[in-house]
Length: 328
Image (cartoon, rainbow, N blue to C red; front, side, top):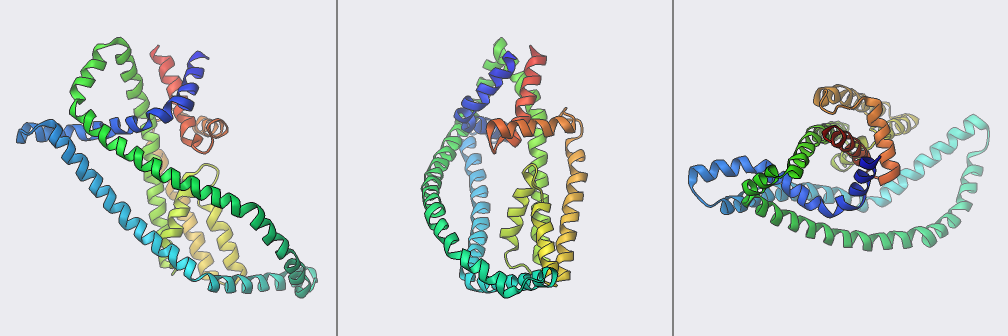
């Protein structure tokens, strides 16, 4: 119970404070072998190679993010520019739905349209009263979040360079102290288990996103990248998955008589589901050390305790509690 309470307090309040330095340490651990090799071969100072490698990594990531965001923003602008066309399509779809309801229930389509039309002004009033202020306040928070994110990235970059510079000294200091030795042992075993889980989820999310983008592009969807990325993120979320998007989408296409599109969306959903079922056991294997039911339970408890990030922090908490208990 003491370990559980300590882990909860650490993740709830301490983790947000040390996340930038934890990420910096992981980057330093990843780059350290290359820095040592270059230092031994080319005989330049370790600090110089650390700065050069971090700069190259930052440049590559920045370039990839730039082109990704550029394509994404172009598709968002296209969506905004075609709002009138989508409004017309929505009206036509609503007309078809009213006709279908009339065929099934006998209620005239005109009566249904008039009833809904009378509710629209009240709905718009509610939107202006409740949703617009929330969106505006949320926009300010998002702007603040962007500045905070940029600051955190700057801290990570500087910390990575400094950790790389003194990596050997820091490692030997930790290994020479009993508490440091125990902490390294727990971190190593947690990294092997939790790292395998996070790595597998990132790989699966990337593959699912590629499948969704490719499938939507083949279907002729002009917003394949934007939509595919959104569906890939949904698939990574627990209790959602690609079926949350593709199943209703396929049903809507069938109702409108577009059977080919409905079939394509069903095929994409089937491929994504099969890929997740095949890849998860192969990528994880026995590295996680958690039965599937334990993973689901830890995710659910994590979501209840930590909020949205609980789907990752829940299993991490379980692994930490288990490893600290076994080590002590």
